[in-house]
Length: 244
Ligand code: PEP
Image (cartoon, rainbow, N blue to C red; front, side):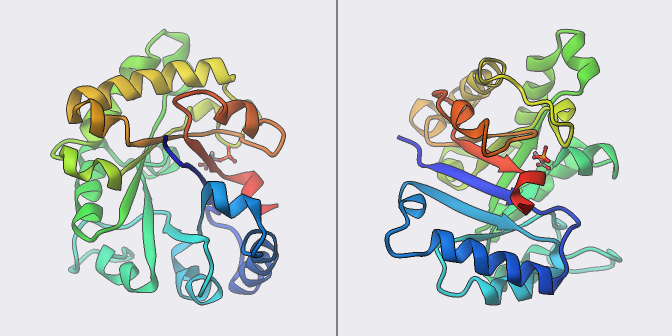
């Protein structure tokens, strides 16, 4: 049984003050002794990089995990504007979102760069949340499984079975991100099932079955239950709704 993971991607939103207020509410709901929520799933927030120190402080003693939204693959060097895994790890960052569609499509990140980041995250004991997903055009052309398969294979190049428990995949159809159009549970399960097959092929059945594959794309409080009820949907990566 894979434990569900619900991860909030705050993107470029919230000031430190707003983040603290948000976390106070979240902790009141999630960290209460009796909170059923925290017992049956993992919960994570991924703030903008500059908020990591403030969020780390606000999460002290919490069951809520801290993630980053991106990072460089080198430990240090002449990479103006970037942050390294070695810089974020000491703040208790346990996860990092990599290859998000906004990084791929707005900032031009390609599979080989994303793969270097995945390997760097593992080296620093940070769990990479590797995002994959097809555009509307690719879906319309019947290329969804091919595109998602290529992104999965390329992103995981050099990752072995031992690392399986330390990686998370996120299937995020580009056409569903921030649009209010969610994949149906059936559409998402088809993609997740094919990702699961790739994971089993690459890592072996036992290790492949341990990897959590999240769904992301306009997930809300209303549609999350039907999505995560599918066998290969192991949680959600939530953008807009995680700010509410
Ligand atoms: C995301 O950014 O990862 C995402 C899924 O956004 P939204 O939930 O707003 O579609």
